[in-house]
Amino acid sequence: MDFMVNIKNNTEALHLASEKSGFIKRLIEGKASKEGYIEYIFNLHAMYKAIEDSLDNNSNHEGIKRFVTKELYKADYIRKDLEVLVGDKLSEMKLLPSTEACVARIYEVSKEHPELIVTYAYIRFIADLFGGRIFPGILTKYYNISSDALNYYNQPNIGNIRDYVMEYHINFDKLNLSEHMQNLFAIEISNVYIYNIAISNELDAKLFPA
Ligand code: HEM
Image (tube, rainbow, N blue to C red):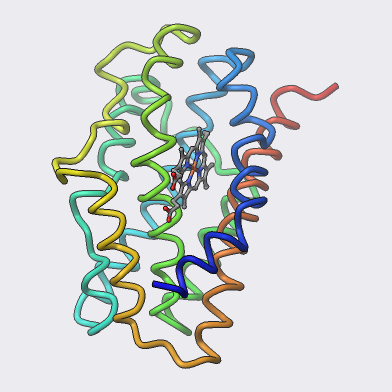
């Protein structure tokens, strides 16, 4: 548990930076656009797909199998939202370079150090349990997104969120990482934040240059 307490303490500022980063900040403040939100979740979809594929591909791995938490998977839900929001035009959309870089890194990690893939799972899935709760209201109010396009925010049936997250943290200890791997784990956690910040900043710069 101390391991995750340290990770959380060390990444406090990175969490804040993610929350306040370009497009996410703009979205929360009601200053983005429906089209921008669509492009944002199009990019998120690719990230979740890479995370979920990597978890599934390593589901026989002793440490990783506890993190194959299908109840938290989001790619299929986001895909549904995109189908409602863009329909056939989905095939014409292109990923941001920073998303391409993130996805490539996820597959690289999955091959080289599969146990580190859980850093990506942790940051996206657990963040959704907390920060994700504020979005449906914002998306309805400012961007006129209908409820049939808000499947991404379906809250999983997991009981008490704090207990679930505590259990998730305990599963990190069960990975039995060597000191060397713990160092790589801490670095990868920062990478996950950095990729998320980059995607949010790149999208903001692309859509709202000025
Ligand atoms: C959109 C604005 C966001 C808000 C309002 C928000 C808010 C929160 C809150 C209230 C918590 C619970 C903290 C606690 O009491 O333990 C949390 C946890 C977390 N957030 Fe965010 N967050 C946001 C965005 C993000 C983003 C963009 C990321 C990363 C991409 C992120 C990653 C995380 C993670 C990994 C945790 C779990 C920490 C743990 O292990 O307990 N959050 N967030």
